[in-house]
Image (cartoon, rainbow, N blue to C red):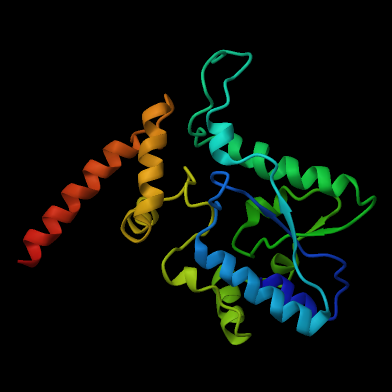
Length: 228
C-alpha cells in the first residue's frame, strides 16, 4: 500500500493494481474479514484519485479443496496434501503464484512493482529482470511504510493486532499471531483443529494444532491464576 501511494505521489505510470484472492473454503476467504473491508476502502480511494480500482484475481481452487486432494505420485502417493510444510509450502505456489503467473503471461511485456521494504534485502536480491522494488530504492523500511500509510489515511487496522499479515491459516505465522487468531477468531481456529485431525503433516514442525490448543489453554490458566 505504501509503495502504491508513493508511486501515485511521484506520478509514476500505473496500468493495473493486481491482487490475488485465495479462499479458505468454498465460502470463507483466506484473509481476515477486516482485510476485505480495507481493500474496499482502498478501491474507493483509488477510483477517486486515479480512476482505477484493484483487479482481484481469484484462485480457482480453495485451500481446503487442495488440502484434501490425494497425491498421485511421489513418496506420499495416495495421501492427502494436508497442511503445507513450513519450507516449500505448496499453498503459495499452487494457489497464488500459479494464478498470478497465468494472468501475467496474458499481458505480454510488463514491469511488475513489488512492495519489498528496505529492511528486506534478501527478497530484493531475488527480483527478476522485469521486477522493481521502489520502496527499497527509496530506502523505506517497514516502519516507514506503516507511518506513511497512517499519514495518508490508509493505515490497515489489522497491524494493530498482527506484526505480519497473511492467510489466517498460514503455517509460517508465529505463536503470538496464533494466540490472537484463537482468541479473536474462534471459528477459524476450530476449522484448523478439524483440519489437523485429517493431516499427517503437523501444522508446525513441533506442534499440531491440538498441541497448540493444549499449550494455549495452559497459558490461559496460568494467566488467570496469576491475575487472581
